[in-house]
Image (cartoon, rainbow, N blue to C red):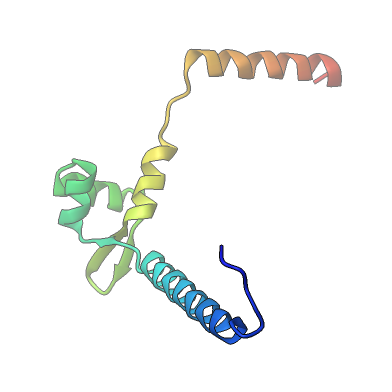
Length: 112
């Protein structure tokens, strides 16, 4: 880093201002990109989930899958579908055993 003198101060402040402006612009662009969430049609959602279109319609009618409806059209947000998939996670045997041990300890302590 070079020595900053009083004579170089205006130039240094100007460069710093330019860099901060570029950082602000990058952050704003990133926020806009995050807000523009990917949305799927029924066919796209079926392809993403690796299900048939008919299965997707069945899951929609049974209210098993998150969906947005506008008029006669169905739309699916990618993040909601990912969350739905993750929500179906099955516990491992060790996780179930841990829960039963925790429940057993709680039952003895609280007299449940």
